Length: 358
Image (cartoon, rainbow, N blue to C red; front, side, top):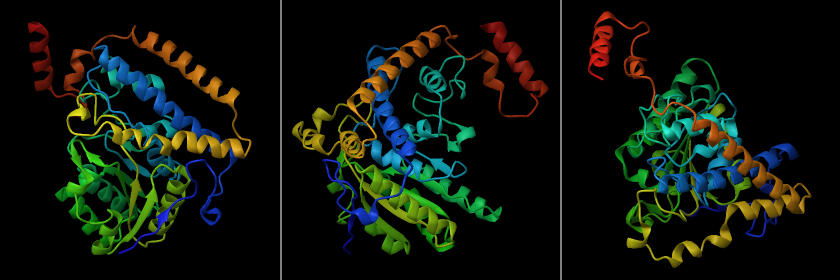
């Protein structure tokens, strides 16, 4: 099976396929770029905080920002997002506040999930961004389920699920794709093929030439996209969403990109990966590519770039200073919350007992 690689921009930001270039408002183009840069800067800061011992865990998406922000832009606010742990930029694009983000990363008294999740495992009901789960691939069938629920309720919302190439080796991926295709679920499967499933290279994940061609076996549409071209991701996801809303079933999108950093702050890629390999992808960086496109359209310049980065530094520093004043831990009684609408008597007794021993 031969799949044409969808690409709108080359590495220099020039439009190479004008027939695929999406029509996007200038303000939205600027916001997409700003979100990508913000995500990159935020990753750098959080990794630094983890190395300082201030937070316990961090995951970066350096070089993969286009594969995250592009699909998020292509959705409606009412559509659902099921992510793995590398797509927080999708929530940032939807308006996830920096303060709330930091509270979750620190697991402090204002953490919306009350310290019950690891850092990076955000849950944002107001944005239809469903709780991040560590086990590989578990979010994929969940996304199919909510897509089916939307259809049963008479809505034309779709569900997008992000996952890495390693997740395609799980049973969760298989059952989700099979069920979604049979039932024509309005779901979009977005595989970020970044070359590595922690320490396992792509060549040991599958003998298929692409991940996208796996769609043919399930009976769904498959698309191969340049994962470092944000415009290509937007057009591919927009088309997939439209097919889903029209009852034409799911789409498997393979975004071909690269994980330039470690799998997580707990990983050391030097023990399994040639250090020259990531350097080969630096000239494919999605952020400079998109910036050059905007500059060619006179929608961005060096002064705005400096202002964006300066504004981020000032905002992050000020917000972090505020976070330092927040209580270090969620209140003890929150351990018993969120199970019953009204806390029953036996949990009150357990809380009293716990308080007496602390």
